Length: 208
Image 1 (cartoon, one colour):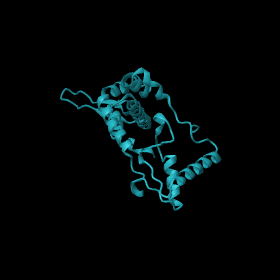
Image 2 (cartoon, one colour):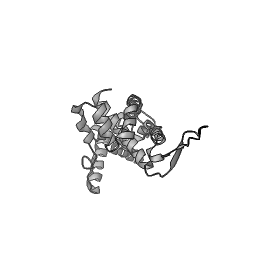
Image 3 (cartoon, one colour):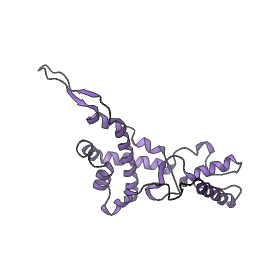
Image 4 (tube, one colour):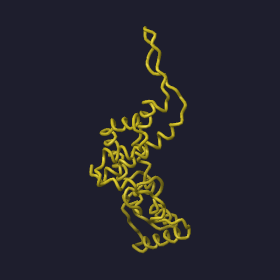
């Protein structure tokens, strides 16, 4: 896995895991661990929010959630991957609704399926999680005062020269402005550019 691939995967993995842990972090459930032995030793009571069980449940199917992402070709760097429909795909679907024939090389009903690129990211996520499972566990039990992205990606996965990309955030200003009129104008311009190519425009599904 190259550093470029590594930072994309690590960033998404970290975001997904911290989001899931945030969802369960307020639970007041208390777990009973261990067994009552003949010696009369009592079970240990451990808050769910601090338990290994919580981490294991958060990691379960973690990389499957990468398949919820789409490729946003209009964005750069790690911002290329985000949940939700890309602007390009929305434009192409709008053309189809207007009766324009658009050929992506795959049936229309498969347009919303995870792309090969995203599926590959999911596999890389699984590889990274297996390789750095102990590091994730160390962070969970001892270093949660740091963000996982900082602890895992900057501290263990990426070389120092590649960590600047982790600070990339999508503000909406890079391509789509806060004004609806400008966004609509950009959509119209994109539609015109597509329709000018031919009556049967063809696009690489990986760029959508």
